[in-house]
Image (cartoon, rainbow, N blue to C red; front, top):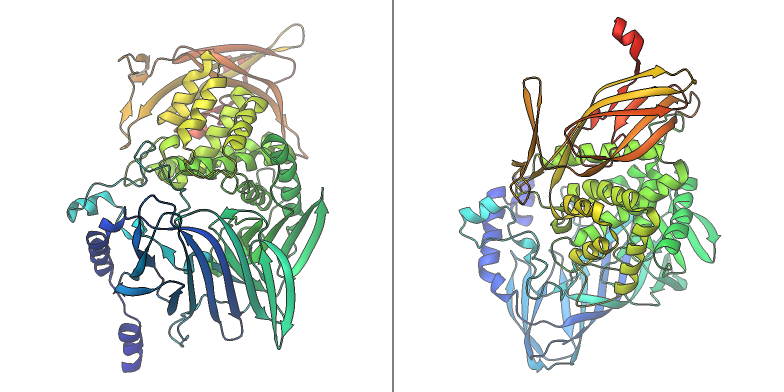
Length: 636
């Protein structure tokens, strides 16, 4: 018992939540003053990673090429390190003048200041602390290691260690802080939101592992060799890339195909073959769609690599390399007989591939709205692949799920919800809301028109450094191609938090003498805006609103001149589960209370107002209703 206490509390210091909170406060108060101090930029990384699966250890290191791209002399280098034994060397004279083990923050005074344009070679080696039976000090796995380059040192003060909760900041008398800088804040466009005090870098890595495993890093395999019981792999990227990389090792089987000159590779556990064809389909369809509608794919290969679910249930896109959790793809059970099942193995593949464009070609500034241009754009892209493969009927399920997740998540927002174009890396906004909004805008404007805006935006900012793009530029481009009648959509979907209440109150039909069917739909359409705290606002910028008395309830709405989709559907196909669309059209709505009378050729089964959930609606379950025969209904 004494030994366990010693290991858990002395050798490995344990902090309570309160202690960690106070440490974050102290970190910010002591070091944030260095946030604006000039630091050199990282322009190249030449790294090595030695992985030892049997003992679950690693040794690693790199040489950074640092260049003073500022207009002032730099006399002190600020370095963030991890709680990993690390030795640092430089090719210039220096002296460590500060090290706080609690913060893992170091400062090195240079014997000769770096003048503008000067270069320093900054090298380091590191290794994990010994593993014990109580503590794992290494992220290495016996089979399926996934290491992020974030374990390496970074240059300059990082505000990621600061407290973000606004109430706690107020409690400790810390300055008011938003999650990300305003798009127009001075210096906001000088860096990209991936961070690392780098723009686009040169990258190469030598990764070694046991002889029965394959080691992988971004780039192309230049050389492979054996030494004793180990195998070495030398990777090098042939073009500039973001300072964002990973290292992997495992006993993989490899599925390979060549598609239109591009090498497609899936590294997987030999037994996990269930969804390989779905992933290949996602890669092929994605390369075709993105290459046609955006810009050409920048690499000669794309690789998916499986990792064990103990690292997490996610996938992540590095340059030409996509680590992919077994839990969300490789062992996923997609029921082909379930008409409502979403093929998420294909969907996630398409999303991560899209990041080769939206992040690895175009990367947003470190400002509000940055993730709209990466996560929302990639989620939209994957939806278009799902639509191409499975048809529009698959979209109803996906959009409804996304909307429901957004609605439930916004209710628990602690720092205040922001509009899509100003979101601060809030996942429920840039994933769930973003996918619905971009898909809807593409539907309203037309796929070719919307993708034309995406294409021109990509061409304008492809592989560009500062000033990095901000989301307001994309929204401005979108406005330029949006007709006057739909300009309200841009404001509703991107610039504000706007929600609808679309309700089908009644739906009936009667058969006409000519054999056709007259369908009558009675429904309500209302919308409102929300402030960041969820307060409902029904007046427009001119102070106007409209109301309707529905029984005892008074319904309020912003003034309406909105185009809302109205649909009538036949029975579902018994085999495919797909419904037959008898009528689907966007109709202009100016009142809360509406009656739509529509003639269709076949007997209707269901009717809906915004039936595919393309508009942000606070209740997604009342948009559709079964259509009853009016004569039988009257008798009843």
